[in-house]
Length: 105
Image (cartoon, rainbow, N blue to C red; front, side, top):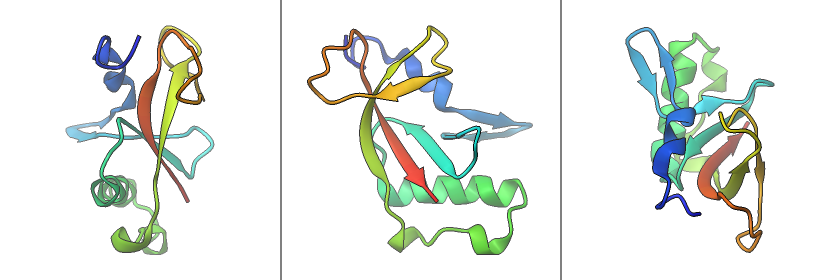
């Protein structure tokens, strides 16, 4: 199954804090940010920066939009709630595979 057949995983890559919605999640260990789909680099870095500012991060942690790289990867969920997922190659044969964007600081 591809993400076009089951586009429901996007909801797991949204962070809601009060009235603010961020189209990304931060890894529980910190310093790794994930977005659903293969997102535009500048747009994704800007969204991560918006989150960092929102949570009161030190200004030194704000990422340069023009000089921060992101990775476009494929993952498969390890549980029905997509609490955990693992990277897979394009030819993995996994039943469910969808694209993500990863930014590591």
